Amino acid sequence: MSGENIQQIIPCEGWLAIFLMEEEPWWSSSRLSCWALVEEVPTRTGQVEQSIIGVEGFDYQDLASNTGGLYGYIHERDITDTSKEGFVEAGKRYKERNDERRRKRDLHG
Image (tube, rainbow, N blue to C red; front, top):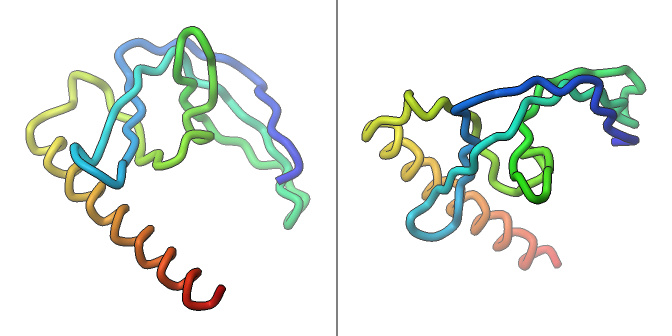
């Protein structure tokens, strides 16, 4: 990727970024402070691509996509016991995939 440019900031209220972890409780959340319309030019295609990405943090702002393990976004009113169970299962799969990648990397040096 050759660069990201934030084109527009859009306020949001009640939205969370969900991150997967490799250990219990398997997931965490971070409140978003706003949405950002991000424009980037990937080096492999040279074409401009746009996406909307959550911005997390209050003292230090960062695109949620810059934090490892981003699973997705959800409004706090939509978090249920069922969605929490889904995050736990996704976190376990996340750990399994990362363990497998590490094994392959260690095998092939």
